[in-house]
Amino acid sequence: MATAVFFHAHPDDEAIQTGGTMARMAADGHRVVLVTATRGELGEVPEGLLSPGEDLAGRRAVELAAACEVLGVARHEYLGYRDSGMAGEPTNEDPSCFWRADVDEAATRLADILDQEHAEVFATYDENGGYGHPDHSAGPGGGWRAAPRAGTERVFMATMNRDHMLSLADRADEFGLAMPDEQRAMLDTLGVHADRITTAVDVSDYLDRKRRAMQVHASQISDTSFFLMMPPVAFAAVWGTEWYIRVGAPADTGVEDSLLVGR
Image 1 (tube, one colour):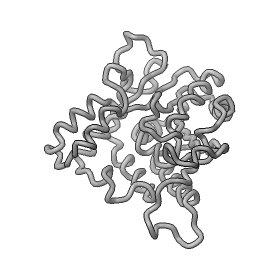
Image 2 (tube, rainbow, N blue to C red):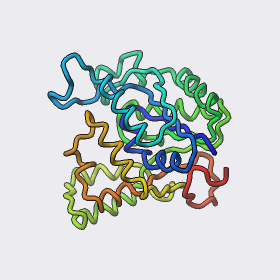
Image 3 (cartoon, one colour):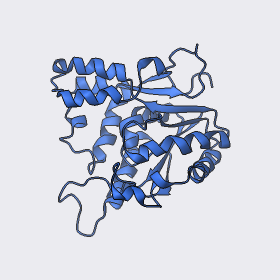
């Protein structure tokens, strides 16, 4: 059995981006480890959600623990940085936030965990971090440096298949969804084109776990969110496959169906 380490910026990112893969690997008997760069203490909070005296970081820690249980995560660690907030906010200047972290220092912290785990697989974000949050953009730098330091050879960038998402947007009415022009325009910069995808993991058998993991992150993903309001057929079409780019994969590899193919 193998050990795979997934590196994400905030609690809830693991469920959205790689939750199906994590659940599938855990169900297959592999050891799944999650590392979260920050506690997500600057996320938006619905009014009245927190109890008196409760802070968001504490709430999100409880939610993340529940998501880890749903997904079969064997170990979770925080990397120890503060949430940077959204792009352009004054919190981006906090020297303790992940956006301002020294890349080599972050890589060393992460490499220590990879080394402890003798990780065979490591997954982080693509070059764009998925979307414009500074903590997502900062993630790949330290991650890509950490893996070779720990001798982890199979390194993946979790991403989205832009062409697939655009094709679904064109069929939104078939799924009972509205796709305003401004939302569709956002897809033009989401993820990467299909020709860059090296790995497409079928997680359709684990969508119930992925959805439940999203649901327990209630401070960030409400029951009325776009993600959870999707009809089941739409949810399956959007989330039934999780997409990756294997770093250094030979050009003639073709599209693999697992993070462990050829190990």
